[in-house]
Length: 166
Image 1: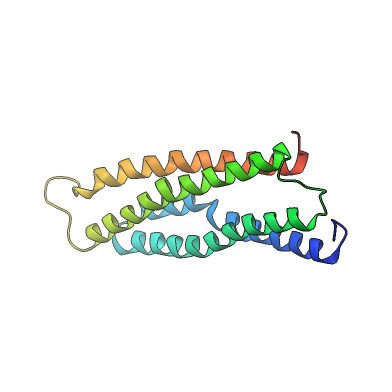
Image 2 (image 1 turned 180 degrees about the vertical axis):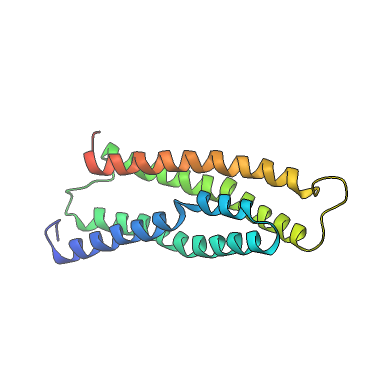
C-alpha cells in the first residue's frame, strides 16, 4: 500500500480527526471544573455531569487514535516501523497517559460528582462548610496535577510525531 495510497491517506485523516475530537473534547475540562466550582448546588453538578458525558464520548475517539495509528504503521509499507524510537516512545507515553486518565483523573472526577450530588441534596450544615468540601478540594488538586501531566504528555507525543527526532 504505502504512504501515498488512498487507504493510508484515509486512515491518516481518521487518525487526525479522532485526535482533534478526542483530545479536543477533554483538553479544556479544567475550565469546566472551574465553572462548576463557581456555581453551587445543581448548577455546578449539571456542568460536571455534562463534562463527564462529553469526556466519555471523547474517550472513544482517543482510543481510536491509537488503533488508527497502528493501522497507519501497518499500511505504510514499512515507511514507519514499530522499532522506530519516536513511534515506540509515542505509544508508550500514550499508554501511560491512558493509565493516568483512568487511574487518577476519571476516578477522582466521578467521586467529585458524587460529592457534589450529596451537597446539592440538602442545605449546608450550620456553622461551616459541608463535610464533602474538604474532600472535593483534595480531589480537585489531584485532578489538576494529573491533568497537567497529561497535557505535557500530549504535547510531547505531538512533538515526537511531527519532528520524529529519534
